Amino acid sequence: MSIFHDHKKLFTAASLLFGTLTLFVAVIPSLYNQKNSVPLYGAIPLTEAQEAGRQIYISNGCVGCHTQQVRNVDMDKTWGKRPGIAADYALSTRKSIWQNAGTLMGTERTGPDLTNIGERQPSQDWHLVHLYNPRIVTPQSIMAPYPWLFEVKDKAAKGDIKVAVPEAFMKGQKGIVVATLDGLNLVAYLQSLKQVKLPDGTPDPKFLYKKEKKEAMASAAGVEPELNGSDLYAANCMACHQQNGEGLAGAFPPLKGSKVVLNDDSEIMVAIIMNGYNAQEQYGVMPAVGTNAGLSAEEVAAIMNHEKTSWGNNAKKVTVEQVKKLMELAKATAPVQ
Image 1 (spheres, one colour):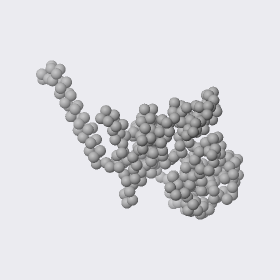
Image 2: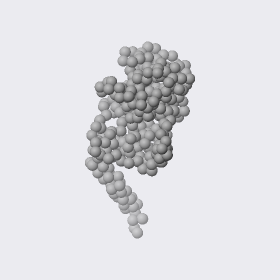
Image 3: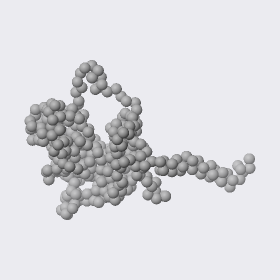
Image 4: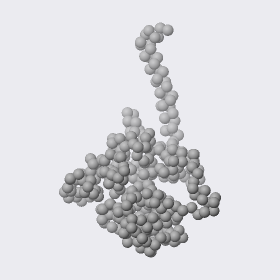
């Protein structure tokens, strides 16, 4: 065939072939998905600050270690209440014809998935400390620190957001650590990452390959399943209050020896878990962990009993029935959002 002896014809044919493949395999399906995928009701477009934070997220290569996709397998229930669907990414559009920054789904989970991090960890204080040096709040973390998102000042100016960095992590520097605008914008973007609830009446996509649960086995045997308070504490509380219950000075209060935890009247403790807390200037704002995570009375009771009997604490345990009543009371007194 003469085409193989004529480089112009050969390269022209190859270019037409790959151009046609690109058109039908990538471009047309992409345009189809963009046309037929609309944002879910309740999805909120990014603010200017959040969009700026998204660009910081991209420029720092966060997508290399963190995904934003909940797959339809049982193990991904940790990252979201349902598998992801196309509509979840409908607001993520290209910035220009040359910039493909539409979705940040990622391909690796060297770090945890961030699809719902705004619900799992809404605390600005925690994110700032974590970005400055992840080992402050998670000693086993392999994530790189991002100190260039912060400044060390002799004195904080009006409006500065101070970061509670322990002296051991200051590397000999003296002063007060404050977040830069880039750092605050990145945190704003992370706080915006929340999985939108599907409209009422819409069936949730199902997780596949479900594992047999111990609770189901216990129920079949006629035994009331006992929840592991230590595991629940690790999943919902440990990131701030630490494994040893000592918290982090200037950021998160200790539970070890806490008057609230040791009090036999647990009304305040349940209210804090369900409604959050913002009454002490020396600590950051605690989010409504129980409400955000949808914790049941059984789960809240297990967490409370773990905290009441750990790290040298020796307080009276609570029952599920007591917690149910206190949760109703906390719901009635919750601040209006």
